[in-house]
Image (cartoon, rainbow, N blue to C red):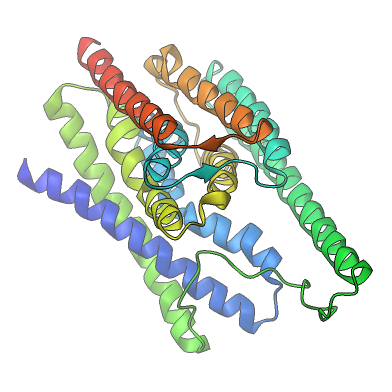
Amino acid sequence: MLFDYISLAGGLVVLIIAGDVLVRGAVGIAQRLGIPNLVIGLTIVAFGTSAPELVISLKAALKDAGGIAIGNVVGSNIANVLLVLGMPALIAATPCGEQGATRTAVFMVAVTLVFIALCFYSPIGLWAGLLLLALLAVFLAGSTIAARRHRRDLKAAANAAGADVATDSFDEDELEDVDDVPDSVWIAIIYIVLGLVGLPLGAHFTITGATTIATAWGVSEAVIGLTVIALGTSLPELATTVMAAIRQHGGVAIGNVIGSNIFNLLAIIGITAVVVPIDVPQEVLKLDVWVMLACAVLLTALAGFKICLGKISGFVMTAAYALYIASVYMLGYAG
């Protein structure tokens, strides 16, 4: 039994490290090829940071463990809102008025509703996966257009004010949260290879440990996916937002959470469903998808009213996550 816990914990660690290494290597190659940072951020970085969740869900679905595949995504989206936004607010005030966040949050709510509807027609198969990927393409295209329009507005404002700013200073946004990108192409290739090897290896140990533990505890695979695996794969986002709060840069947290949740639903479930149908456990439809929807609506309200999260709201959100986890286990054992 001890080996199963080591397998689960070690697999999650390997997944997180492998995903990070893969992102650094891919960004290094893309920059050497002259690919704009905007494109890199919307594609390589976005997909790369979601790679652990993607590999977990795909591996689980291939092993006929649909509960882990669905639970991982639903649980991660809940953790991203209540924990990833709640805990940093305990450290420092976290403003939720990032530009464009409200529009993106509304799209996230719409995507969440589409996903929930698909869950009631289990299994989520090829055509549903293609629909989700089509919505992902719409999201990426819209984000690209909005980012370019924003940069043009910045240029126009700078020129109108007569600021001494080079015209190309807004041409490329700096990549956030991607440090230590290798300068050498060969080192970047090594990073990519290590990432591609580490991801499936970490997924194998994580799924093996999780399914065995679920059986030993007498709970379903969905419960493990919603809690342990979801929390584990959300740790990078949590660490990033906590450090941002410590450095007084918490204003970008809500945008990162919204983007991550959209990618979880559209990219991870979409790609997995195209490869193999995903069975949706009935227990997830009783509570978890509705908690996820409530979190999406909460995010939209926070962004729309430009609320600044403080210590009290941070405590409430963190406590709500703890209550949710307790509810999942109680229902899991009862079931």
